[in-house]
Figure (cartoon, rainbow, N blue to C red):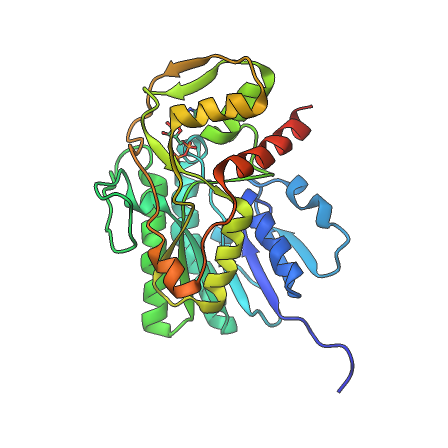
Length: 317
Ligand code: UDP
């Protein structure tokens, strides 16, 4: 046997996105070679710039909705491509629907052809505006299919159905993760979500825009915890969905106040209209992830927010 062994390869769609780029990094650190695909609708070359020159990372500008044709062996197929913030999918609804449905089918087709393990990045949005709190994986959700969030929520629900169908019909080794609100370096400043908005506003001394009365809740996970969870699901998961998120829940008003404080900002809080179908509460029940994977988040909310704030300071300078 020669000394050189061929590395196993992972294909990551949305590899130049916020979570996708962190995932590529983690896979490389595990000793895999990575082929990252992105069409740059919401991803950015800058997110992978620090990995340029790494011989184990290949990047291809590609739209997975048009088919995914790749030579050679593939061990893992990870489907992370999709607009993911409400303003982004609201302005790209057809693309969002396509990448969740046709894109998922194409990535599953690749996994089937290569006998690879497939992982779908699904979302807490499959629970819609939840009537059960916190949300366990067994909850079927409360989604408005024809509202502005329908393109994302229903596409991801369809994507989950695709994963189960490929598993049951073609015995593809599939995984489904439901990602709850996540933040960290490389989030787009202008993606419209609460964390980037509040941080950019606090740093610039602009008013902090809390939608509605700010009593709606979210639970924010730091990206390193999330990526550790993704790898645990890859290693020890089965075909059934796993919630990945931090169960530490805050109101959006508390979040705004915390960020103002952390930033040492003089920004005042102003209230704007609440978007249609904005979920009133969201917190993952992570009992399943704890039992199945021994995984739980380690980064406390304020520590994570502090790190993300550092990043936004560095890009807004
Ligand atoms: N939000 C807000 N101000 C903003 C952006 C968002 O109050 O500038 C609220 C939004 O209405 C929602 C929560 O923050 O209730 C989280 O929104 P985000 O867009 O981060 O993600 P979502 O969980 O809704 O997908």
